[in-house]
Image 1 (cartoon, helix red, strand yellow):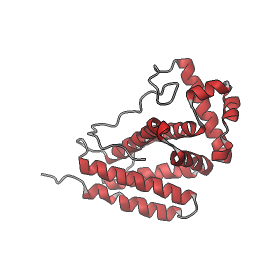
Image 2 (tube, helix red, strand yellow):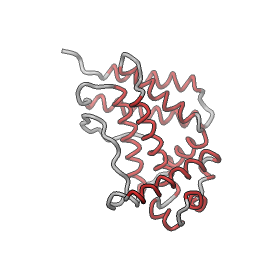
Image 3 (cartoon, rainbow, N blue to C red):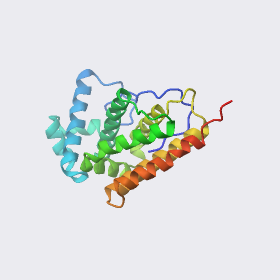
Image 4 (cartoon, rainbow, N blue to C red):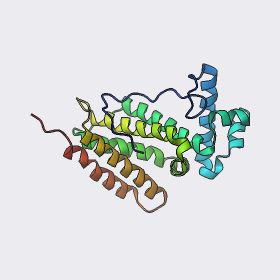
Length: 219
């Protein structure tokens, strides 16, 4: 979950989704957006109960009360659907974190707290977390726009937590990418049972020290 190094002033919300992933379609109407919300809710519910394998497109269509052909127009594959579900989950986390920002005094401390809060939110739904991470792992080039959106959201969450007073430097954006890599890796190792929550916390706090190391020197 990494983002391209760009000059970022303030993290912007993800662009409004369109009906077909990666297309140049116009923004969704209110009715179409409501349908899309039902689809994403059904996807998350099925994944929460049984993980990746439980998300079958026919069942998603039935649960969300849309035709199977309509579902495929919104999401061409299960991987597209689950990556979009992760995007939706991250947007919800971002909104929650903005309402209750981290309390740490230093940027590294705030980012570590933020990522652990996000991690614990995923920990409460391990089957859903596993399904979304597997979808990201399976994603090919056709899912690149959706994966990029997940990346931008993760970057925005970290930059918000850093609370920078000026646009991030190239070194700071590089540190953010390494932090994203580590968070994603920590999630995978925890889901596979190869790391404890305590170890994840140590790894996240350690990698967040890069924020201090790449901070511009004060004049």
